[in-house]
Each structure stands twice: as structure tokens, then as C-alpha cells.
Length: 622
Image (cartoon, rainbow, N blue to C red):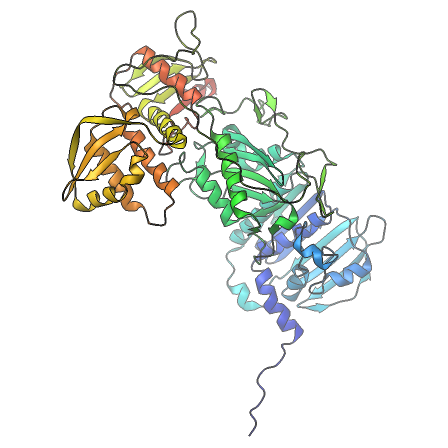
């Protein structure tokens, strides 16, 4: 007896509904796909209307180039697209969409209607209901395209049951438009949710769009990030470590005008902030990368939010190097902590020249007609000036060497830097001003040149200075050590002693020469010269605790960074030590000259600034 045949082809409507599950998982996904289509069509203004969280109704209107009737009939067929003119284009995608799945997927699970009109033609419309396609009919409409989606997932009730509340779904949809707005600042966006305007953005440049979306606090704490290599260009804004968040939601990464949540780029962002951000905090940034389309694969994720780079190590290194260079300013040199940037006018609007460094405006957005034509002939509009056009030859940049600080804590008193200019009164002036007093033997009170009050945590500040100097010596070949006249024996748990002995070679590079001295004891022969003469027992106990958290796979660079931070903490001036005016002034001047001096090695702020506005708010004078 021949068995019955059990394999059969699914009906087209069923297959379309199954496929739609990968493309349209919630209303936000439908909104994202429709807005991306509008941007690819050259829209300069996009309006989105949501009702019932987008479940009841989604309306996306744009002023793009529209479609002729023949294209309108094809656009709702699966795998029909205008964005891949030939097979080779798949390997150098320069548009947001390219699969030809969005409109058919949305039409398979909802009631879809599209009305479109080319700039020099007549308007036409088409309707799709649960995969059943209607005829193209004449219509009345302004130039552009109007896409309306009603009763999303009515054809797949099981999917509809798993949606969240209307408010939650609407917030996800608004966030999807918000991320696209970052990538396309020259386009105006408006989102209305149940009759309420949730987002309204006028066309702007990248700095203005970042300020509008991330707020005034970000603008006050942001520094420009820039880097150019033969086939990679990076620019944007990154907040100083003092402006961080509990989650990574405010990390906006854009590659070739495509907003992404790529793990490699996010990891690079974490590494760049690793030594300046407190544990559990996340940086805030808006970064734009431009790379030849054939050097990046965007077809690796259903939602196109992850990428695969041809030279992933090079891209990672470029991002880390550029961010560290931007963050490597001395304390008080970059944006002030606790006060708005002067680039904001009295009404709260960003200054057109913001951001700037040393009075030189940084152009973050190209002229309206700027473009890039890559070596293969593909073009992507509205690029920033200076982006490369040659073939892909990018390699990772060399690491940025830390600035060698001049200030250290010797066994005696601190002294003023020899090259520091002195005022007629004998005090030194700089961005952090002149010291006025020491409070609680822990904090330095200073007056900035503009009259603002500066409060410095002397231990945290000197910890960063020591950290940077140790790091500079390590990069130069090894930390200089100071042999002990009599080697010290430190008793400790046997497991900790074994951990230290196993890492003796790495610790020797940090100027800490040790060896196992029986069971549960370590013999210390030398300490880093920068630390003076700290008690070795607490130092070894802290390093042993750090070692306990390391895994064998932990990179050597990361292990050394952690150990340097521990050494810096033990070699820094402590809270409770009385400083004289010269020592306080020397500390302030070195903070201004030392990279990343706005935070200590653990990511805590080293100083706070209270300007006239802050004091007025504290006393209720505003």
C-alpha cells in the first residue's frame, strides 16, 4: 500500500501571513517600514498618525516622488522593489529598504490602502485586504504618497493577542520614528497619537536634531566626535561621562543613514567609556558613520538593525579611538558640568554655531546638495563633506597615547608646575580658576574666571591624574618601579596569594614586583614609583579581589587597565589630608591638562561647577 502524500503547498495568502510575522511583529515595525519607504522616495516631510497604538489605524503621508499606476500595482507584490536595479546592487545597498516585503506583509494582515501621485502625473489608489488585492483606480491627492493601515493583525488574531496596551505600542512606534529622525535630520517629522502631537521636528542639521531629541542637558554635556580615514568617516556628539543613563536607550548609532543597534558598535562605545563611567551607567551619544556600501552587509537581520562589516576590527578601533580622543580633554576645558552651554540662547534654542571648540564651529551637516559617489558608481545623498570616494582600504588607526601629566604626589609637598603662568597676586588662573579654601579636608573650593564656584574632590581628582600617568608609562614600555629597601612580606588568604603569583609577570609591567613566599604569603620587592610608599597589604588585597573577577578570556589590556585603576586609587591623596594653597593650585592646573580628568577611575565626577544660574535656582531667585 502506497502511503498518502502529506506535503502540500500552502495557499499564497497563508504563506504571506506567515512571512509577515518576520517583518511586521508589532505596529512599530509597520511604521518603521512605511517611513523608510517615504525616505527612500525622497520625502522632505513625513507625517505619521496613530490611533489605538497603531493597531486601529496607521497613516503615513509624505511629499516624495510618488508612483505611476504600473508601479503602484507592483509595489504590493512580494519581492517587487525599485531599489535593486540589478543583482550586483544587493552587495552595495545604499537604500533603507531593498527586500520588497514590507507592503505585501502589511497588506496580508490588515486593511491597506495606498494613494499616490507623481509630481508630474495623476493620482491613483489601490486597496489590499488580508492579502486580497483590488484594482488600481483614479483618485485625488497632492504629490507624494499616502499609506493607510487599518485593523492591523485582524487577519491573524493570534498575533494580535500578544500585543501590549495601546499606549505601549504607540510609544514603540514613536521611538521608531525618532530613531529615523536622527538619521535624517534634513527631513521634517510629525507624529500624532490619538489626536495628540507626540513628535514634531523641523528640518535641521545633525547638531540641531540631536539637541532637539536628546534635550538641553545633553547639549550642555556633549563634545563633538570626528574621525576620517580613507573609507570611513565618523562624526557626531558624545556626552561627557557625567551625563549618563541607567540604560542604553539613548545611544543613537547611524550607519549610512540607517539607524542600527549593532552589537559591535555598542561594544565599542562601552570600551571607549570604560575607564570614565561608573559601573551600571551607560553613555549617551549620537554618532554617524559613513562607509562604502560594499564594505558592510545590511542583510543579516530581519529588522535590518544589525550589520556585518568587512573590517569589523577596523571599524571598532576607529570608533574607540575617536571617542577617546573627544573625551580626552582636561577638566574644565570641555562643556561645564552642571550649567548650560553658552551656545544656548535665553529662549533655550541652540546656537547655530554649536557645538564649537575654542571658538571654531564644527560643521556636522553638509550643504543641501552634497553627496558621495563611491568607486563602484553608487551614490548616497546628503553626506558630510570630506567622506571618501576611493576603494575600501580602511585599517584601524593607531591608539591614542595618553598625555603625560606633570603633577604627581611626591612624599613631600606638591609644587606648582614650572610653566604655569602666574597672576600678579601669585595665583594661577585657568578654566578651574584659583583655589579659595579647602573644605572638610576633602574638597577644594575654587573660583573660575567667570565667577562660577568649582568644588573639587581632591582624592577623586588626584586618582585620575595618577591613573593617566601610570597609563602613559605603561604605553611607553612599563611603569617605573621603586625597589623597597627591605622587601615586605604580606600575609593573605592562600587563594589570593596564588592568584597574585600567577599574574606576577603582568603585575611586573605595572611596577609591582612580587613572588610567592610560602603558603598564604607574598613577598613584595618593589612598588610603582608614582605611588610613593603606600602600605602594600591593602594594595595587594584590592588587586587580588580584582583578579578574582577576571576570567581567562579577559583581554590583557582590560586586566592591566583594571589593575592601573587600583594602583591609582592607592597612590592618590586621601580625603582628610590638609593641602596648602600651592598644592591646591597645582592640582587644579594638572586637572586642566590631563585627559579625562572630569571623572575618576571609577567614573565618579571629580568636580562640580555652580554658575550664577545654578546659585540663583538654589536660592529661588529665578
